[in-house]
Image (cartoon, rainbow, N blue to C red; front, side):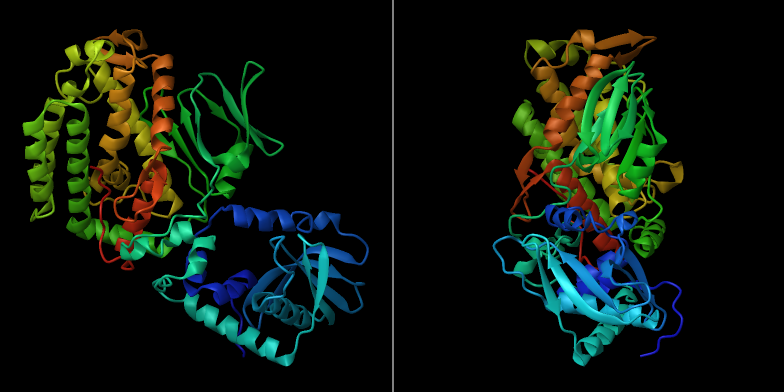
Length: 535
């Protein structure tokens, strides 16, 4: 096969993954990346051989190879042999201890592709082997002509996959999905709105959002750890692998080395003012789903009433549920349930906004009924309705700050799947605000942000001394902000049973799932968007 010169070669790893799942290949080709325990094991297995500087005499590590004829590029873990003699290619693989060190078809394919590249580069390959790190055993692989023929066919097949404008359909009830590194972005069961198996593999399972909220502190990178210091005192030190994202509050300095590393890892940094207003965020250059992002802008300009209807309906439903659980407004809850149904039948965006506004008025008129108990009495007594910046009372100030925290999480989730937070469907994209992030957060306002505020007042976590007044506005103290951050993180990491998919999921993960369902609805791989509701 002669494809001619190819400007952007296909990675060998992508061809190998085509054996596993065509949908995964397409997702990887558009830049989707994941971080799982399974992948971390593979990275650990390669850590030593990936250091080219540690190569020895007649042992070369992390060697880049390329085939212009096939339009292929890749990296060999270890190549043994003299510079002018025949070579032995050794591929490192992590294998579960209880399994036999068995050479798979995918292993043979990878070695065949590496061999084809080396031969085109003018080198003779005498032997190919797989080293199983768990068993510390090398297994020789005798490649035959059929292996090379299948390898070239696999390259052609992969090129057709990555050239497609839409992702292939996900496998139907395939047991391999639960172990796939890309299950958290592929969403095979969620794609069809089916009950899904309990997730065994999750994206960055131990990672957390790091909030830097101590004024005058500095956040930096040191020996693979994120460190927070102030005046020479170390306040926090965590491995960078555990940092899913960084939120910077107010006057906090972040080192350029840490910013660069987080961008490299596709970890979003969100900057907020001391009052909680989102100022901006970082995004890596190689963000995924570039074509889908273009489609998002077209859809935003043309309008997607169906998506906006679901978001508003879910928002009203969740507000009614929170009010039913914590307030004294049965009639209001019943009226909001009717508005919830009206939202999905709205004939225009203007009608939908009218329904949303009526529901919001009912909800916030009854909001102080949820601020019960002696500790919350001061907040309830000063409530005069929902008022935005500047907040005139403690409850509004707390809502503003918590909504900003939620907005930051929505921005991070959208950036992670390659969507533009500005191009929305409910909120106007013409006002230079992150419209899609504001859209996405609607259904999570009540169960995440509002519930945090209600609980903080009722439990005495926020008291009158956590607020100050100036020229008719109410401001939160440093202690108050830290109390809300702590409460917000506890809430958003709380698990609940997903009402559609049937497995336990944190609220943070639910936001990520909804962001990906928006993505699927935009690119046509998802039949419809459904909001998350709780009862």
